[in-house]
Image 1: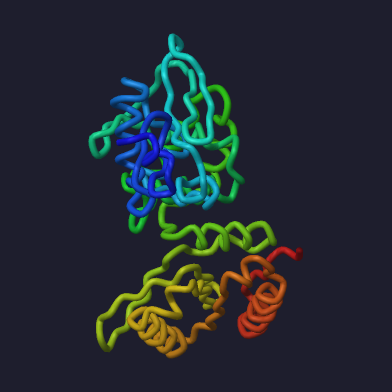
Image 2: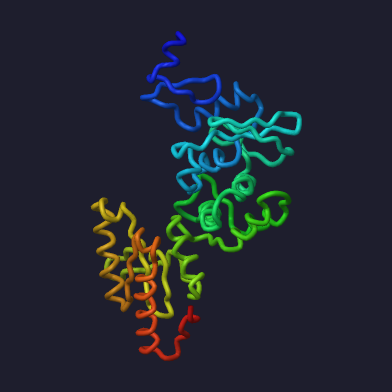
Length: 289
């Protein structure tokens, strides 16, 4: 290509020395492959790039779409470099995996690598995704194994990862479930049951309650944007509501706005638990906030 073409707005730089069409940019895996084969031969794709390729639920600014550079690591003989497009870290050799033709940091190592730069709740969501028995990351590692691996780690990010692993659970199927669960615990509520099975005896259909307090028969359901615009999901939610109400459950729904500012939701939850505690005096009310 002529230099004029490379400099035009029809092309954009992928990583140092490599361009792609602006109207058809390469995906993250393809760019990572170029880095591993040509830019830094033998480097391991690491940090947020490995985490994104493994489908961890990263905050948007830590993703390629959010402007994050490609991250890779080399051994002690390499040279650390940093640019807007590529971060090359120099670290001791550690565990890796092969994934879709790439050599990546092992998932637990990738969690340690991102731990210093990600909020605790988001790191817990990533551990939840790695441990999830459904709808999780691209690979699954049982939570006990994650915790055992984290206990052996040393260096930057290890302590933060151990804290996140302690707060993680295996049956959490979305980042918002993580956020709401940690919100409830932080406000003094007991641990809710994540994705509790609910069986409808007439049809035999099994539903899953996002977060449940069986002792109060209170179900907490998070409604993301998909619940509003997806007709099938909307109808399924209606049916689940009917089943819950028929079986004597109180259903509390919350949205993104409630997660950002949870005071009204918590007041509704306070009222619901107080009502159920009056109906069953033996139930233990939550610790006062």
